[in-house]
Length: 178
Image 1 (cartoon, rainbow, N blue to C red):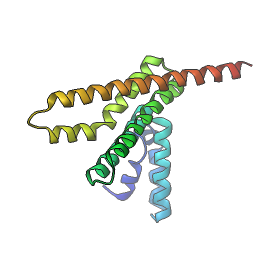
Image 2: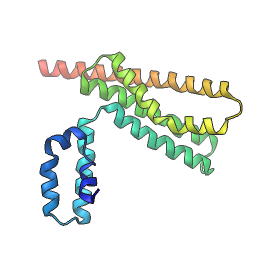
Image 3: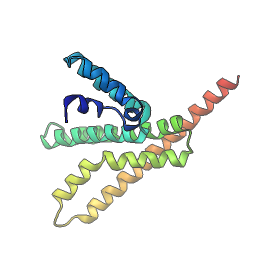
């Protein structure tokens, strides 16, 4: 696989199906400088923001956030209260997933809430994996309780985001009707 093909993979599949051959032709004619590579990667990320489901983007962001927080805590760069604050701040990704899904896809509140829970399943994978590695022998009830609390908080933050998204959509509809 060539560098040009890897650059094409920075774009979503639907975009590549529609415009991929054209971009491949442009890349074949240009010299791959740092500026060209950076431009292609930045535009690929922008297309993901426009075309991908919001829960996938928020879930990926939460995954990176959670991984970073857990690694910094493992390196003992956090006090426990600081760790909890940073960990809880990650739930804002789920709030965003609910609101963004509601606004972009004009779905119902329940569907937007479920989308934020899907984001949580992606985003909280690092801490669940660490729990599983740390407590292989016992403590399964502690892991189950922690997972249940995380799931409940995910539902609450997703629901709050979906309700806010519905409120904003209602305001937009009122303004466009006026």
